[in-house]
Image (cartoon, rainbow, N blue to C red; front, side, top):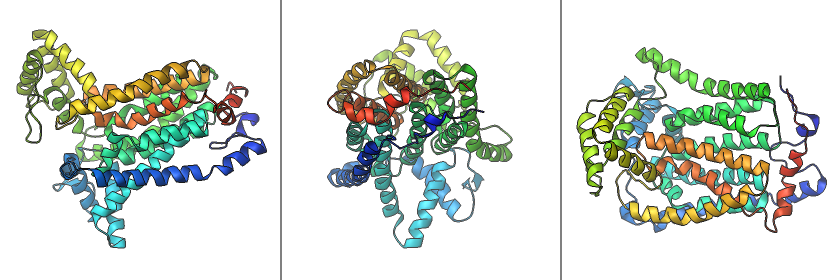
Length: 450
C-alpha cells in the first residue's frame, strides 16, 4: 500500500505552507474566494439583464424532451421513466439534480423557473471558485484570481446560465475532481484513497453528462504522464484505484439499465443521434437552424450521409456509412472532418452567429499561445501540468468531433485553459507568491516509491 512520506503528509490540500508567515498570509486572503463567488454571481445576473430578449429563449431541446420529464416523474414517485418506460436514453445524474431542485422549490414556495435560475447563478459562482482553487494550487494566489476573472466573464460560459443546462452541475463535480487530482500530484501525496475519491467524482460527472464516459481512463493516462516521481508499480496501483472509484460511481446505473433492457448500455443511447447529426447538420434542415452555405463537396457528402443514416441506430452502422462515403468521395469526407474539428470551437446547433463566435474565440487564442510559451519555460512541474491540460482538452475535442462538433462540448475545459493562462503571470513580480504556494517546496520532498 502506498503511504505518503511524513514530510509530504504535512502539506494538506488547500494549505499553502507550513511556516507561520505563509499561514498568516493565507488567512489574510480568505476573503478572496468569497469575493470571487459573489462577483461571479453578479456578473451572471448582469449578463441576464443585458441579454436581448430574442436570445433568452430556451433552446435546450434535451431539457424539454428528456431531462425535465424524467425529473418530474422522479418527483412524482414514478422513478427513472419517460413516457411510461424506463429511461435509458441519458444517464440519470442531471435528472436527479433537477428533481432535487423541483423538490426544494415546492418546499420553499418559489417557482421552478426561479429555482433553476438560482441554481445556475450559484453554480457559476462555485465553478469560478473551483477554478480559482485549481489555479492557486499551481501558480499562487494572484495568478489564480486572473483565471477566475477570465472564466466568470467568458461569454460562452455565461450563455449556459440563461437556460437549464447539464453543463453547470457537470463542471462543479469535474473541477472538484481536478482540484483533488492536481493537489495530490503537486504535493506528491500518494495515498490511494485520494485517487479513488477522484475517480468516484469523475464517475459522478459521467452520470451527469455522457461526454465524460472516458474521463476515468483519460485521467489515468494523465496520472501516468505526470507522476514520474513514482515507480511504475506505484503509478499502476494509483491508476487502478482511480478507475475502481470511477467504476463504483457508474456501476449502479449500469446494473439498473441492464436489468431493464438485458443489454449493457454505455451511459445512454443519446450519443448515436449526436453522431448522426454531427455528420449531417448541413443537410438536416431542422426548423430552428439557420441556412448556411458549405463547399459543394462537403454539402454533397452530408446529403449522402443524411440519406444513408436515416435508419442507423448503432455505431457500427454509422462507421460503415462513413466508410462507404469515404471510398466514394474521399476529399469531401476529409473536408467534412476538418470542418468538424474547427466547429468544435465555434459551432452551434442552430448554426447561428458562428462567424461572430469564431472571432471572439480567436481573440482568446492569442493569450493562450503566449501563455503556453511562458509556462513551458518555467520548469518541469509546470510542463507536466500543461501536458495534463493538453490531454484532457484533447479528450473533449475528440469526443466533440465524434458527436455534434459544438462549442458547448469544449466550454467545460476552457476553464482549464484559463488556468494555464494564469500560469504565464506567475513569473512576473508575483513570483514570490507562487513560491509560497508550496509548488517548489513540494518538488524538494522525497517521493515514496511504493
